Length: 109
Image (cartoon, rainbow, N blue to C red; front, side, top):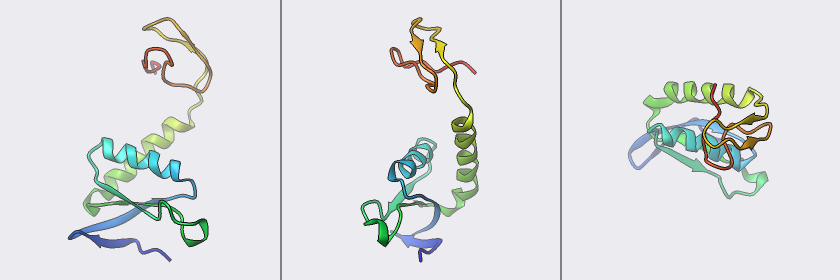
């Protein structure tokens, strides 16, 4: 059983997310790191039976703000994206993609 709090290098850490899929944990880690939240992943290479990958935040004072970032990401992921034409380069982008494959522009909301 994993603990919800731990100490690493003198910092109090808090577990914020766990999932069987390490790429999903990595997605959430990237979101937090891009927004200035220090993170650490435990059990990233552990066998399935020994534990799922866990995402921990280094500064537990950032826990609530991190949960808000997760809510925003979940909202973005749950909105279906239809096919569209990129306004920057004019290329057609297939359904399900929010970024142009050719120039990297994001679909306007």
